[in-house]
Image (cartoon, rainbow, N blue to C red):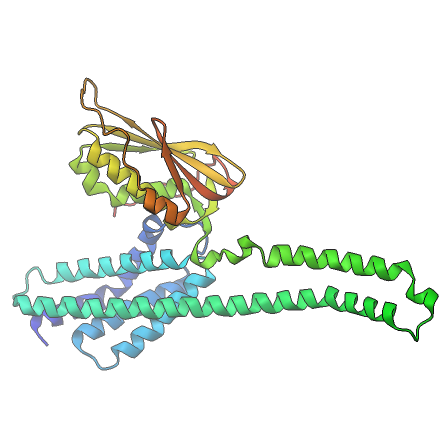
Length: 357
C-alpha cells in the first residue's frame, strides 16, 4: 500500500463520524424532502459505509461484504422513510462527493505518484458503484415487500364483498330453497351494495394514481426547497453570468415528482443564463395553485440600460418536459406546471434557508 493510500484510509477512518454528521446536516438541502428524519442508527450506518470505503482503499479483503451489508440498510431505510429512489441516489452522490473532498484534503502534503492517485480514485469509484447498486437493491427489496403486503390486503378486501355476492347469487339460483325466499329483494339489495363496494375498492386500489408508485416518483416536497437546491447546483454558472436568482418565500408544498421539477427548472435556468446578458436577474415564484398541480413562474429582468435582448422565443427544455410531465411554456415569463396535489399552498416551509455547502 502506498503512503498516499495509507494517508487517505487513515483520514477516512478518523473522520468517519464527522463525515456522517456533516452528510446528515447537508443531505436535506442537497435533496430536499419533508419526510423521514435521519436517526442515530441511520447515522451509524453511514459511518460504517465510510469506514468500509477506507478499508477498500487499504485493500482489506472483507470490504465488499461490509459495504454491501451497510449499503443494503441505506436503501431499506430510505424506502421506509418515504424517500424516492432518485433522491436516495442523490444523497449517496453527496456522500461520495464529501468523501472525495476528504481524500483530496488528506493528500495535499503527502508525496506520491499520479499512478497512486489514480489507483485511489479507481478504488473510490468501485466502492461508489457497489454502494449505489446494493442500496438500490435494498430499496427495491423493501418496496416489493411493501407492495406484496398492499396487494395481500387488497385481495382480502375484494374477496369479502365478492363472497357475499356469490352467496346471494347461489341462494337465488338454489331450487331447493322456496321461491318466495329466493325472490326476497334483500338478496338483490345485498348484491348491488357489495358490487358498489367492489367497484369503489377497484377504483381506489387499482387506479392510475395507485399505480403511480410513490417510491419511484412522488413525495411531499416544498417547491421553494427544490428551487434553492437548483440555485445551489448552478452557483458557478450564475457567478460566471453575474446573474442573481431570487426565490419567493411562500412557494407551496406539493405531493409531486421532485426530480422531474428539478430537472426541468434546471434546464430553464441554464438556458436563460446562457441567453441573458450579464448582470440580469431572475425571480422564481408561484403563479397559481390548482387542485392537481402548481404553476411556477420564472421572470427575468435585464440590466438597466441594456440594449441586448434574449433570443426570441427562449429555447425551452421541451424534451425533458415531455418525459417528466412538467409542462413548460412562455408568454413573457416562463411557466412550469408541476403535476401533483398541493398540501399547504403558499405556506413558508421551515428549513428553507441554504446551507454553506
